[in-house]
Length: 113
Image 1 (tube, rainbow, N blue to C red):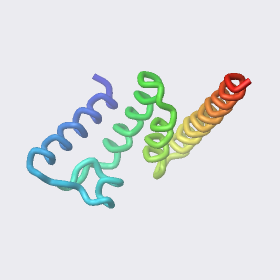
Image 2 (image 1 turned 45 degrees about the horizontal axis):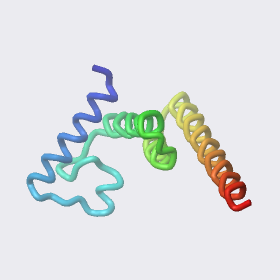
Image 3 (image 1 turned 90 degrees about the vertical axis):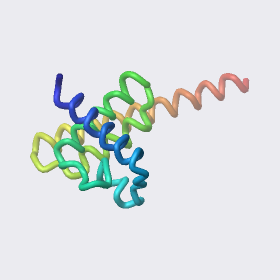
């Protein structure tokens, strides 16, 4: 099992455990941690967010949500390769989102004619 899968499973397990305990994260906590009970180490959070970004992009074809997860995952990248990887992914997703918006606009214009 790869690191992304492990991180995602841990994140989901922590969320379920918190939900079962009736713990509701505050706005600040839900944006920075995967759970309210002690939080998740930064590495696992970043890996989980990267995995979610890839899943949203490739499996669900939801570029907007993939971009949101990618920005959160790479917001605090500490190494040069991590920052470069994040910048590359975010730039590609932004370009894809712009292309999708342009193609939808063209479809709307041709449908109106």
